[in-house]
Amino acid sequence: MQKILVINGVNLGMLGIREPEIYGNQTYSDLEKFIKFWGKQYGLKVTVFQSDKEGEICQLIHGAYWKGYDGIIINAGAYTHTSIAILDALKAAGKPTVEVHLTDINEREDFRKFSYISLYASQVIVGKGFDGYREALGYFANAQVGE
Image 1 (cartoon, rainbow, N blue to C red):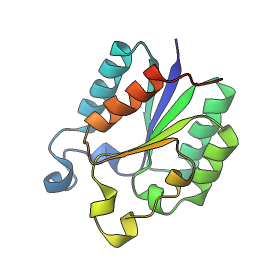
Image 2 (image 1 turned 135 degrees about the vertical axis):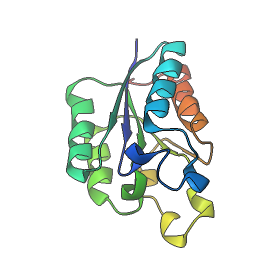
Image 3 (image 1 turned 90 degrees about the vertical axis):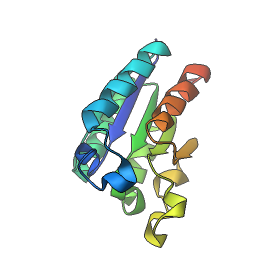
């Protein structure tokens, strides 16, 4: 069974509260349940984390290497557009990575259109809401990762 680490970054814990006109009314707890449900459906062992701290996110990524995860799904929130440290952590861990965003970052403010994570990610999924995570989990379920 493949082990997939799902990392959600800064402000994602505020889903359902933060800008519901952009992010909707579903909560972070709803997102966690959605991810775990689809992980199980795809036969994946999924671990989900959320942190607002850049360094903690980097440590989680490093842990993907040390704990033998087969892949990473990451929505780093605003750190997507600012964090070379997260990019470097992904490169260091060397795990296949799918970047996910609830909204289409290419259709938003100019500063959101650049992603450091996209420089490493195998796939980028934007603008599909929670279903973007389902698609990312499906990517790992159907891919031969870890080889």
